[in-house]
Length: 108
Ligand code: SF4
Ligand code: SF4
Image (cartoon, rainbow, N blue to C red; front, top):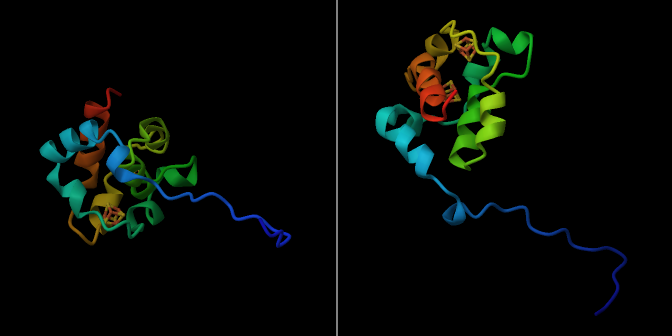
């Protein structure tokens, strides 16, 4: 092999087909609105709890889609269920209710 003086990093691509989406599908069944999220980040930008500790519904939804449950729940630990994110969501998702359902489905 020719030495070019550098190496190519391994791909960080996620294989969604190999992920266990059972819990996310169960969540989508009782909260179909979760599928409408376009990861705009308005909820995170307006979050009251994010001023005090890392809180991000946007990122939590993405992590749940990838079956990275623990990291997702850590990002919702500080949620005070104030409902501010519900008021700003451009997709009209009842985010407050979604967070409650996430806690129910994932056992917290
Ligand atoms: S309901 Fe939770 S996630 Fe939404 S703005 Fe309030 S503290 Fe943040
Ligand atoms: S504001 Fe709504 S659409 Fe935007 S990231 Fe949050 S939940 Fe998703």
